[in-house]
Image (spheres, rainbow, N blue to C red):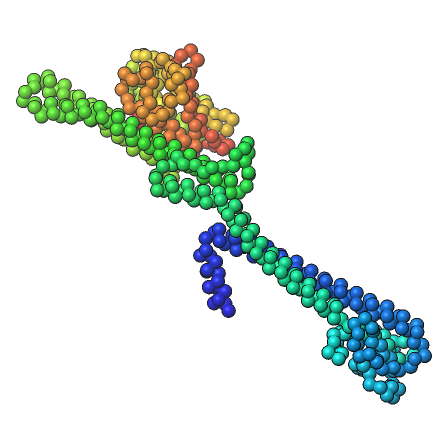
Length: 481
């Protein structure tokens, strides 16, 4: 039996979800329908039997008032007629029995009722081949029992008819349950079917632009399946954006690499014919080749950095933003000797430590400082500051260059985006994109705004728990990339 149950369970689990849901719904409705029919049958049978018992009790009461001096009497009709009760009087002492044979069965319980030692009772039996319901009670002030019996053919027939009728209703209920189960599974799993079809279509076409149709209306039907479909659509939207960004990155990288690679090939071909060049031409071609190799190397390194999704967790350590800023500014002064870099440190922020990767945070600051120096006029200032308060550490970098045009502001941190004013300057357009990626990997937010009075102002905000002092300074080791 246990093996059969296991086989049945495996068979059910192997069925499709729609089949299992239909079976479950059908079984639930069928159990309810059969249960209601069974309960109705029991109630009907009890009520019909009770009505027959009431008739017997009333008949016995009437006969008790008319049979005060009858004495022991044997039943004379043997319950041959349905509407005529069969009556007999049985004494407590068998010696007083009449000579005639009793038509109804006499048992010790009957003698006990006649003697007053037993309570009245009802009995179902068969007399002369007919179903009979008999009531036995004691005659008052006499040691005799009165037995009244009525044919129960009508009751039995009614019970049988009701049983067949309820069985038909139950069968119809089971069939209806099967139809309802199929309808419920088909309707309830329709969004799941659409979700599955969409997923299979995306897998076949590799096109994440497909979406699942949701119920129309302001709010639609806020059920679990609809929320699942909405979440799946949101996931598809994110996937589409990711694929689009990946394709755009590849296209932009190809475009950015085409020019320096062409120049590299040209200079390499030129140097291959060095015997035809003058010393000055060879030096110029060699310098151009070296510079272009450095630009290509920087671009490739930046692309590799941007391809990283998150910072390596094992490299996290407690770092001091103040020390990182001073280190990055010192390196920027060597790289940009014509720019006046200034640092303003809030005393409260000087000793705060944050979890991070020192080399990556140093790269972030270096990119911001290089961007500010690139747009600053010769001898112009680049102002940096570090403050703490309101549960955050705020680092700012400001230049006094041409600033950011309103149409360029939404695209400042896009990969390979270069404003019109910056297209003549060196660079690949990846520095700020990399800076924002590093900031987000550390739980910080990097924003850009036009500075009052001209120039650009970058805000780097690190949320912190209650600040604590560092025991020792922890600075970054990498300089600007």
